[in-house]
Image (cartoon, rainbow, N blue to C red; front, top):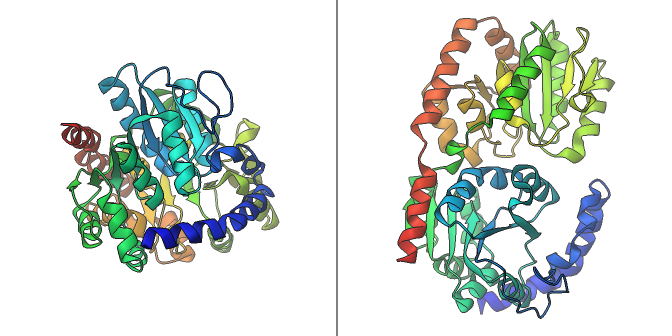
Length: 428
């Protein structure tokens, strides 16, 4: 009955979903593409014919990963490499919910994987997905519970696992508002690999079974060689100036940071801002220019002029290079109540970290990074700028924080191997 009511609600919201796609397309035209996939209509892998009733057998066994957007897709890198080694000859299918997730998949994996949008969670769309691609098993990255998808997988006997799972206290409270629906979805999963003991406990409190703590796969991501080379090129362009990075900033944060930076007096340091969402690149460049800063953009692909005060990182897939080339990294999404973006890449690069008060998405990683000396907390934008200036003037402290960050990242490696073992145990 709970899933019946849920399905009715999904159907009632479908017109709103179409309007939402049109609204998002005003700023990001990619939302106008591949609409058929969102309703369960796919291109047949062999013939290219519409896939509504397709029963064509894929040319190779399919392994399916769902990664909703950018962060989950990037986190899947070491898992994809491990799956290719463990299952040679299989093809890999990614499902996404956002154009930026899809673009990230293209940038990271190219033609080595297939990619589609996950359909809206209606029973018939999910059945078409499974009938069309016939996956050997499915892996959902982090936390995406779609009751009709899970039920369709059980009916089709497709093992579906939740891996690299995280669940904040806030999200747990929201899921707890629908206990029967949540419990049924969680218990329909073949296995769950949680990032931490706290995540596992929250999932089990909601009714999850077969939960293991496997760790955070993001710690296993290694900076690609070409990204490290790009970081050296960035440093050459920066010259001898000190550089601080505002990484993956969210809407509203850039205004606070720029105002605080202007009020304190930017001095000789260069501020690099990399907005979390590409559709905001132009907006953030405008915000900086309106405040009187001399602005350049990464897309100009030019040397940084000595007079430039703010560089907008308007590129995709280069965050490792930005982290590795900076003297300090502030982690966006933590200044306002967004729950923080990923601090693990900065730690792995040995970049001293500053992080704001909102860290629920990476709560345990943030606590440990602060405790070991890899990161410092800031209260607000003024405190951020104050600590930036203090760190830029203190090379010894930056060196200690760099070493602590690298050691912190190294201690937490191994989640990918534990996740593969979880998959293997479920298959036996």
